[in-house]
Image (cartoon, rainbow, N blue to C red; front, top):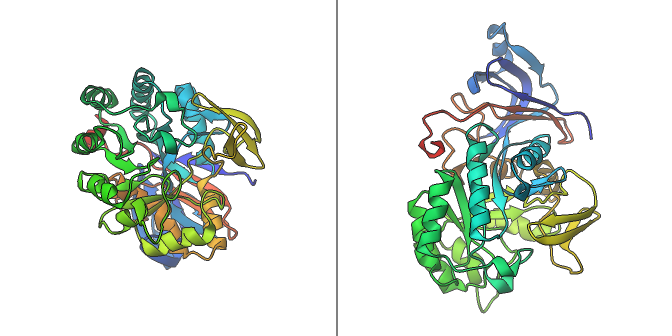
Length: 397
């Protein structure tokens, strides 16, 4: 992999010019922007950049693509580090993904006893207050179906209780961004309502819920499907299942692991076409992402990674991925999926899911200067992180 330059655009102004802009608003050749104090200050096309910011570091984007920074709302580790292993491991994992274009991420945790999850959530809340790449936490469990547990330890799977819900919300201090829940668990619909009321995005996943129950969960406030197609019933011509229920419900979003392993590329393209502007590409990456094949741990379970595919030791069960978001983009392009749709699924759609689209997701003045510059083969060349989100974000208090 070529050397990637990573910078934080917090004080020193940066002017990128003569690039091909690609974001959810479209494609624009000969594009330039000026980033200052963590924000995109000005933008335009042509030679207008020559009249601005003589004090700025100038980057020639000729022959390169410029996109917003990627947002991963579901990752478990990277660079050999797992999110369960504390502050240093989380920051090392997210730094590994940053070199692949991910400027912001939600830190995902596998199922564990509530006491351990509370400790991890508190750690992530502290990190989110000072590390601009960390948006908050995602609890992928413990409220999951045992028969659809995937790589989760079944001994940690439980039904939600009002007391646990309040403890989680209080400990997170507004930084719990997402929680995955199986609607079939006892008390699940009440839990969905409670988390939604607290401003948490509730996702449906690791479930055997049918069409009707999924609709009830969506009516209760859920608005996201966790790694669509994986650990849930597929689309059946007799029983449409949770995916069709979500497609039938306006305002629902879909996570998608576009690694060519978790979901067939043609099925991935089908979802992108069926739900435009509603798909968020995720990595669901475990520690082996940006690292080597070998033996790892995901929570309490042992994982073996062979030729980049992670499986529970001794089984054929997938255990997260080794994907990075730049690779997901490359696979999507190779699969014939529209480039603008792919960029939107990596940037603006995850920002919408997290209600951060006023700050992130497009190359527009006033938005954070989270930027990725690619060569013509979609290899990451430069990554710019705009710094901490504005201090008036009450959910980071």
